[in-house]
Amino acid sequence: MELSSRGAKMSGLSGIRSIMEDIALAASDSSGGTWLNLSPGNPAAIPEVTATWRRLQEEAMAEGFAEATGRYGPSRGSDILVEAIIRYFNARYGWQLRPQNVLVGTGCQMLAFMATTLFTGPYASGDRQLVLPSVPDYTGYQGLSLDAGGIVGVDPGIELQEHRSFRYTFDLDAVRRHGQMGMMLLSSPGNPTGRSIQRDDLAGLIEIAEQRDIPLLLDHAYGDPFPGVAQDSVDPPLHPNVINCFTLSKAGLPGERLGFAIGPEEAIDAMLSFTANSHLHAPQLIQATAARALNSGEIDTLTSEAIRPYYLRKRQVAEKLLHELLPESVNWRLHSSEGGMFCWLWIDHDWFSDLVLYEELKRKKVFVVPGRHFFVGPFTSPFLADHATRCVRLSLSPDEADIAQGIGLLAETLEELRGAK
Image 1 (cartoon, rainbow, N blue to C red):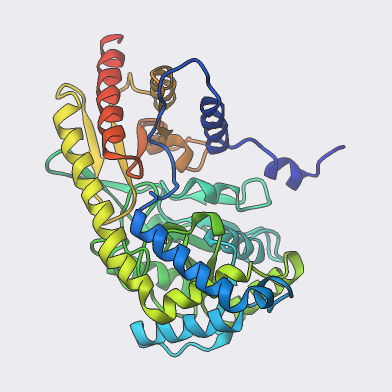
Image 2: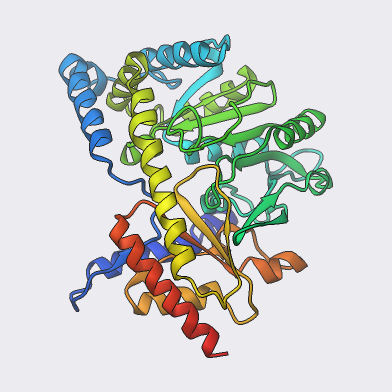
């Protein structure tokens, strides 16, 4: 059967999907030896987090299993969860939300896909694109547009810092130069870098969104109020041109695919119709569980006492190991992090290729993620031609022993690659 042009685009094998297939193949490897997977975006299974969600789920099942699973529900989300979201965010941020400002969905990625489909693509005045105002950013965004060439990324600036650190900066003037903008999308804290957007940059993006009368979608999957792994962040902004997306994936429920959007009524209403027309509503039993976590305040306890300390400790351990083990002779830098669940490394040498490193580490039974998958191709700009293939992402989710062993093998491999040139 012949695919349409949109079908061909959406059925293409993405870089990250090919890596996941590599990992699945490795899991079935019977040749012996243990694989070290430093690539997953899956959050760590923190015992106290898992136990709390299990208890809340059992309570929700005992109270309303038949009602939650035996009938269809509202496309906006169950009344109990929508009310809990309104109560929680109004109390925390002093907002005045109404149900018309809220939509429950199956995770941030699906919410972003709906918004991208609604606000980009063909218009009477010409095609409009999804603009990522600073790459690198979450690799899953690159599959959001149904149209070829529908997504563009803006090259960042680079600020070099002490102690082998660096930070990407926003180029707001470059963002403004995009004339076919239909929506902007940004994760903060970012995946893969852990960078939190600063107040002035956020104000600049909102100003652009206002001037163009387009939405700015902010993906808070790693941010406040949960999972709260950012050590320093700006509160989510309530603004007529901003759609805020939140998820419980990184707060311990990645398999349940539950998230929600908060934004202006006009945008939320369009996304609500999209939901009803495509998949009716999100699963309801987990909505009842999430409402319990919000209403009881247990989501805040998990965030402050379990999740945030866990990833802060992991980050400190990983940074110490990187400085101790990576070769002094290699020009490597670590992106400074205000939060997040990853380490983002830049190896600035002509002899370095992220794909070569990936293959060499795979031979040693180690998985990482090549950095190029977080940039939007083609890599034709001078910056991307040099930079996009010289980065790599390491996950902080594995056990500390696995992180230590994996970084040791990374250091060994960098030495080998440098010596081969």
